[in-house]
Length: 206
Image (cartoon, rainbow, N blue to C red; front, side):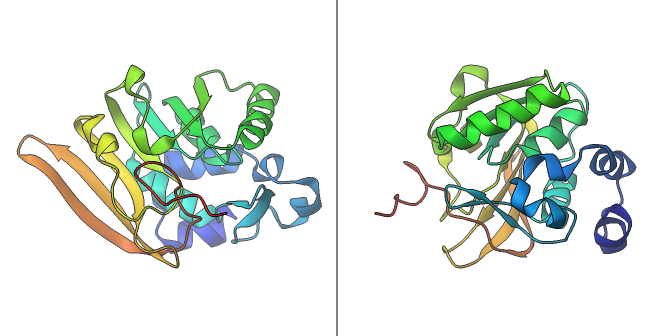
């Protein structure tokens, strides 16, 4: 997976490649899909949600570029795979998941593999987690119609926000940086994520 799906497609950070070699994706997928865990594809994790393809997780991590000790806010814990990658890289991770069952399952895996620098909560990720702000990095693992203003507000000077932005059907992966002269943004290709549901995201269906 690391050689053929990540390294050959532009993931050049050795620390990120090492993290993907040592954080085992099969631990974060339902047993029925374990045989597909290292394929370059998203997989169902229940509750209508998915674990992103390995390349997309790596691309977002490389854009975020966390260093040990960084305070990182993750919106959308999901399976916990992205969370574990960030934790392995030495970030202090605060992660929010809207679905309590998914969060409970992810927390079980964190305990199983001994990840201790992770704080988690069930809630609306579109309003962030102000109690622990500001953050050196914020990563959103669901597609948003626009950038939630609370997330930009909670970004530290020099901090980065990685988020898929666009309609429900497809998004553009965007990177926002807080600089001394304000927020600057850049685009990094198309992507398709499940909708970001919340006050500053999409309304819940049904």
